[in-house]
Length: 276
View 1 (tube, helix red, strand yellow):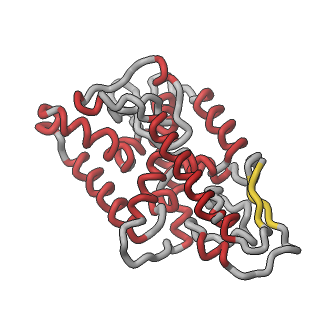
View 2 (cartoon, rainbow, N blue to C red):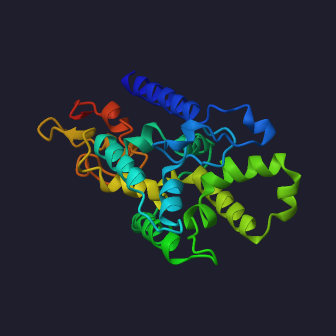
View 3 (cartoon, one colour):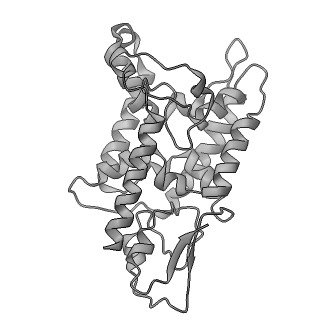
């Protein structure tokens, strides 16, 4: 009973976060972007700036935009925001507040054989963070001296799904000029969607630079998971239900833990607790 209660509460919070980040639903039919005052603030999770329904900015996109400007300034506001959120919540943002995380979880419910990601591949997201979010926006510049938002431009499946597809659906002139880059990103999106049916939160585990940032702050976050090893009966149930394929007993502070509380709900000895 506790497990279903935790799961329902988390899902309701995920839906509420999705609705708050995408409150301009009316813009979807018009293919119009909201550019009001709320867009100067970042969403805590991955949610595309170019989504017509988006009311907040994407922190990854904002960080690249500032770094890639002609002045090559560092995004202290964005970095400070990510640091503050990460110190408070860690990757609980991924488990509770990320719209694209919710979408992946819903896809994973499609009946199919389920499998786990090869663990060494989890480090790919750190390479994506360093190369596509931190280095290329500064190093790869155009004729005007501006850097490219490389992650958004070449990889981000959330941007393709939430931004590119709705805009192409409502703007015939954009469909006429969509080229090889859109084809590449569409293929990446398709690969992520298909693989997410078989691997829980495939994008979060493999490619998400935002998850990499929050993961690095997991050991410091105020919201955390604790294990009472004296109460633990080593039944393994927490490891079985973990969507991120970690052992909560041994890895309670793992950078992969999204604080989803599945382990807390499943523990028959009540040896696992989560809180501030």
